[in-house]
Length: 74
Image 1 (spheres, rainbow, N blue to C red):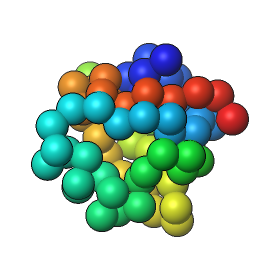
Image 2: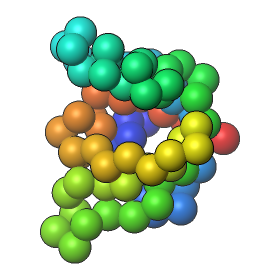
Image 3: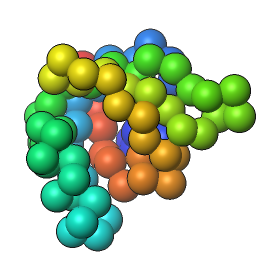
Image 4: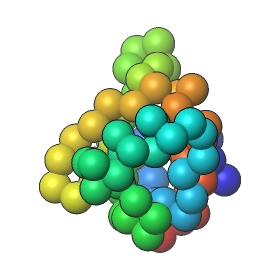
């Protein structure tokens, strides 16, 4: 499953991050790497971006980028 398919309130574990190297590097600098536990908090009124919580901070991520993050339920 990919992160863009998740619903608000889902608790997930990041399994793999695909996409371009710059995107992967930005996420890793923030500590979002494989086996990181995250929670989907909410979506904006139009559905994009989505807000997630992980490693002690909140982060907004576009659905386009969320399609590159493979996750599984915790």
